[in-house]
Image (cartoon, rainbow, N blue to C red; front, side, top):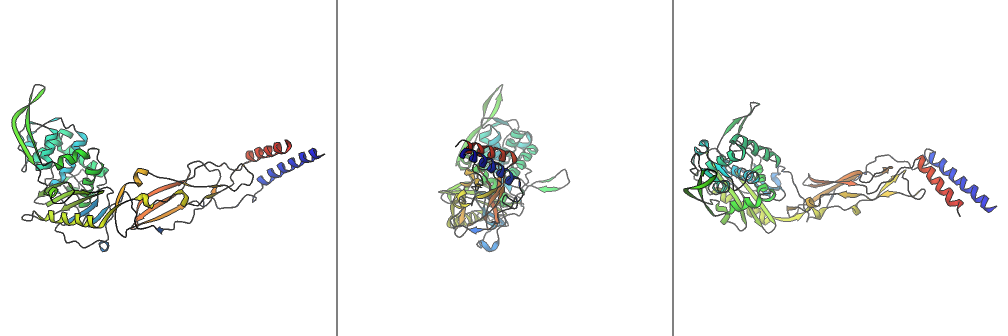
Length: 455
């Protein structure tokens, strides 16, 4: 009698389960896809950081008033690309021989230092400052790079460009593509040596050989921190003196032609401040004195770019401005990482999953979100001034409707510095949850039936 009663009770509950699952309004009501209304920003402690920073124009009211000779100047955090100070930093101006840092890094990345490069008649006709290379003469590419960066020889720049790309025009195209790739949108290269030049594009637009202080600083930052040839670049630009010989071709071999050359480094900044790292000077009648240089102390790397920093007889202006900007950076900025500001999954409340099929009937289901992030990126160094801090906003679904799939994106976290978005990461769910469907209800009914009848 008892077994028969239990049998009918199990059937009754199974049928009841099927009916309840099929009735509208029995399952929890919710607005599918409802977003958690937490795009609430909150300030984090003031010892924070961030990585990649777009070059936003700095509000003059939040930076000090430094008296500089340069018409255009930028102080940049080389590791993050963040501009720490700027004066007309986005004004397009000619940049003279500071151009040669791009020529050098492209040659290092695309050439073989042991190659022999032939001097064309065009290259041999370059004006001073020049090496005095003769048409038909050969030089090792490595020696030409020392000539380029230590003495700023214009003919060496053309020999390098023709060797790497076939012509100076093709090399200029390489320079411009590289500039865009590293984020320099206001730079236009025409020559490999920085001599003043004008070019008309196919659309009839006229360009001058030009850049901005912000772009020039970004190119130097790339050369010393990001390029796969950064160590070779630093070795060349830090060398005090380099001697070499010219070559002539004899059959398949190259033999010395008896001409010897010695190049001396004219970057006086290397001996002016502790930690001075690299740099390149420049001058033309249109550009005036220009300079781009870098300095590293402990874990801080700064880049200064100066354009139109005086004309003769004001050759020392660029050193005064460089030291002033570097000193400002050293005195006011410290290293942090974005890691210090990151939210973790435990900071985010679980998300209810409605209509989810759990192991237990009517179980309260939820997902604890996880955050997908680039660990290398968030550990990248960033220089922050005391009082600077991040704001964090997060936004994600406050309820989910089954089915939910493993890895499904449900929102994102955004990190801001001075109201500028610098980094964002996505929020995901870790597990899959199936929806309550008719097949699920049937399976559960059979399960309960077997459970009751077996006891």
